[in-house]
Length: 119
Image (tube, rainbow, N blue to C red; front, side):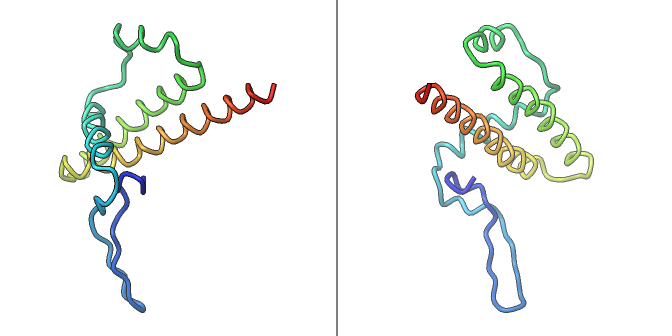
C-alpha cells in the first residue's frame, strides 16, 4: 500500500494528530490501475466466461483468495455506500484493500516458488 501511495497522510505534533487523504507519493501508474479495478466492485461478484478461461492456468489457492476478495470488497463497497460516503472515497478505500489481497497472492506465490526451488 505504501509503495503505491495509498496510505493516509498524517501531520502530528505532540498530542495533536491530524490525518488526511492518501499521500499519492508512490507509483502513480499502479495506483491508477488499482483504483480503476476497484470500480468493478460496485457490481456483485461473479466469474464470467472470459475470467474463467484466464483462471485455468492459476493455482487453486490464488483463485480462492481472489474469490474471497470479490465478496469482501463488494460487501465493503455496499456498506460504505449505505452509510453515505462519496463514491470516490469508497473506491479509494476498496482499492487500498485490494492492494492487500494482491500482496497476499504475491507472497503466497513467492513462498510456493521457494518451496519448489528447495525441492
